[in-house]
Length: 181
Image: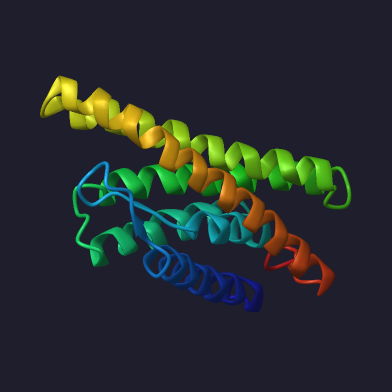
């Protein structure tokens, strides 16, 4: 195994752990859905996606967040979270890697990628709650999805701002290049 590959695997493992910790230890119950909670793990998903690229963002978002749901006994949400947070990390990673190809990490484009990641999370949970929870009770699924829109939007906004700040801090100490570059 090459040194860069090993370094990237170690960084992905660390980011999975950081996403788990940020998600699990900042959770605030939303009081809307049993097991649903507000957290700041998305900020670390954004950071992981910028540092590690699309695949690293996908892995950190999917695995770290789903493990936090399992640890918080929110087992119903773990598969949903795995997909939604993985797609969030993938989206931010893809947009950020496109930014990098055009040169330095530009502030405006970084803002767009963090907002896009938040939007993926908000829309992903809305669709999952409306349709998947709707399989158990059609009215409950849509009601839960609409009720969770505000907490998910607030979480997306706070996490996008915090994730943006984290990326800026890491770029100041020259740690904003994806692993292996």
